Length: 271
Image (tube, rainbow, N blue to C red):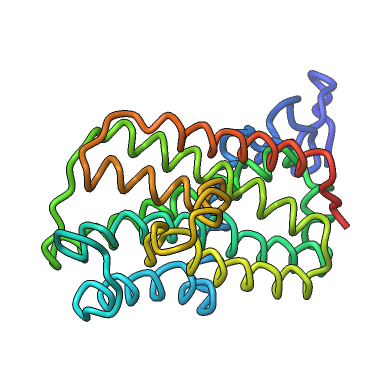
């Protein structure tokens, strides 16, 4: 470094640069970009996980094909696929929003991933938002795949698309709340066992494959209050029977969404 005697200013490699010329500029990225990046990361991690892929994509697809083509269960009048497709769509929502999310989040909590992410520039509420968006992206892929398979099997849906969308959104909210509540309060191993057990029980008793009217009357009333029953029956009323807005089922899902998300927000432990 040298000094220009005529001007008194420093010249050469060591001369100072003007303020604000540093690249890249320090600081966190915009919040929207952080949420989008975390959403993409969560989605990739889910789709790369073989066990989660089996649970969210392969099992619903196999159930739809098997029970639509083999006369195992009496699904009433009409084509079997018309009864089964709405139930399998409900199962896909549950497998991603509840079972898959509960297991993945539970082990992230056990290994300290959530604790470290909670200390990052990404706010904790934004992290949960990214997880929810990842669930929605995965559900879209599931629904597209299952719809294509159902149409190939002869499915002929009917009804109000807005009612279907509302049922799917409320169902996602309800199952997400319950999944996060389980992951944030139980140990990871307990979450793994409980989430899979609930998945199997609701698959059998939630109106997904076996019609609710096959159960005793008292059991029908109780099972009808479950979120999977409300979602599957609501979708079936709209897509199979062409019903309007299934307010009773929407009410059940809304109640579960408020209870689940509220409890998860209050009781969730990050470590």
